[in-house]
Length: 265
Image (cartoon, rainbow, N blue to C red; front, top):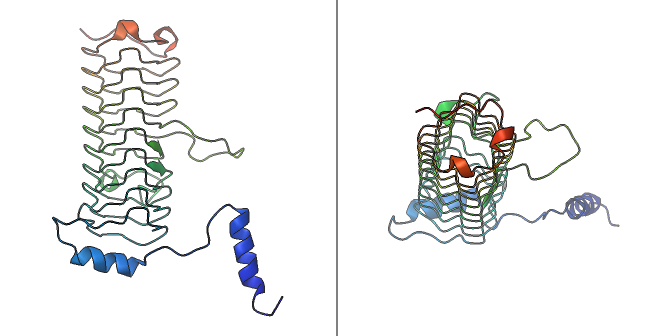
């Protein structure tokens, strides 16, 4: 092997060994910034299927761009305006979304695993991302999203449960939605196993057929929620508000739930 090629060979080999591509992103952060700056609000740009991994796209207004199937692994979207953006089936794993606004975005079938939503280990409400009225149907979410806004979002059939076992002690072992706003959200048939929903606002939420096994619903407000055929086996319902909850007589595992009290009349 000629001098100077050893390092390149090792990098390529390491990338193959890790199952990761060592190729550069399809666009640079500067190119993205320039294109989005010139874009007109009524003519969204199309970045569908593009590799945009690890780019610094913080603070950008995406102007409802199309990013269906795009790979944004590790991208920095801090403070970005992502309202109405099409992220259908996109990869958003390990993205930085501090203060990002996704309201009305299409994230159906997307992957949002282990995002960074806060600048410190302790969640800061002012930094929580917003996903109001987003479409997360069939999506995979896993991470610390305490205090995030999911009001009116469609999470039908989404999975928020632990997705792997690395064999190591995990700092984050379950999805955290402590104090999150899920009022009016559609969580029917969603997998919420182990999810922490302490103090969450679930007023009027659709949870019919949802898997809430071992979920933490302590102090959550479930006023007017639909729990028809939901599974709450071994869930924590301590001090949960169950006013006007629909379908309680059809809920599975209610006798194994912890801290279960009678619904407030």
